[in-house]
Image (cartoon, rainbow, N blue to C red; front, side, top):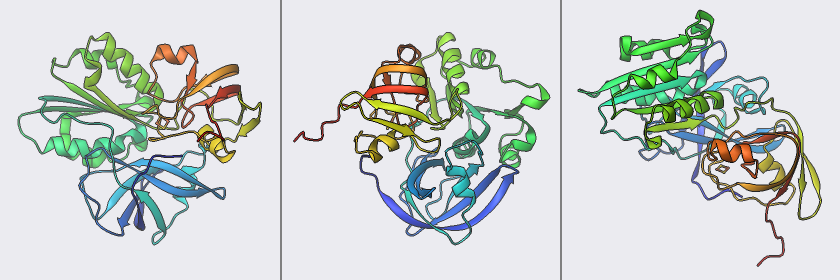
Length: 326
Ligand code: FES
């Protein structure tokens, strides 16, 4: 059960491949969207293997109320959302949510350090573009990719930022040194990051180790990127002893709700904590894919955010669900 959000219809205006594995999809909403913060994402309603599901995609580039651009990386081992998106053609109809952002960017700073990992470049493009238009500020973008061939929007970013863009291509041995990057920033700097979970966790550690204010590191996540493989697992309900299987292509939240064990949710990206439920027993390992819980809380395995987190093995949970409660 998700908190209310505003949905609207849209049509796919065009598609183009911006790298061999990343497809940009331009959407024309049925009515112009209200002004939205840069770095926003939209939720897209999709039928995946016959089941209605929702996926989140960040908006690319400058703010535009008439056309929304998203970019989808084809991920063969994912839960099926990217495959479904790649199968859509120009003219297809979709339901999308209004754009919203969790970045809450402070635009009054003098120094901005932008960091993107892979497809995490998408929300960063609009922010980079806006910062590039402002005078008297420092901005740098660190873009970590496997290879330059996998780097979407490199031409635009190079044009805007010139030598303020650094590409860290893994196949060139150019790794991003977060500690050194953060150490070189002035005290008022803010870092804005989007990348996979491993990068986010490393950045949070490096940011804290550098003695910087946690609130000066702003980030969004890929809700589906974890540290362990995405595989089917079992969930037992403490209240009833019922057991259900979470398929590889479904979230634990969706599986619980499908089975009638209602769990409240909001962001469904592992960021708000609304969906958190108690872990009663664990036979296996939890892959905490949220950014809501601290490292310490994750190690404790007392709670799990079922919208994104997964398990290798079997987990017993208490959803506090009471079907007869008034
Ligand atoms: S709904 Fe926000 S963390 Fe799960």
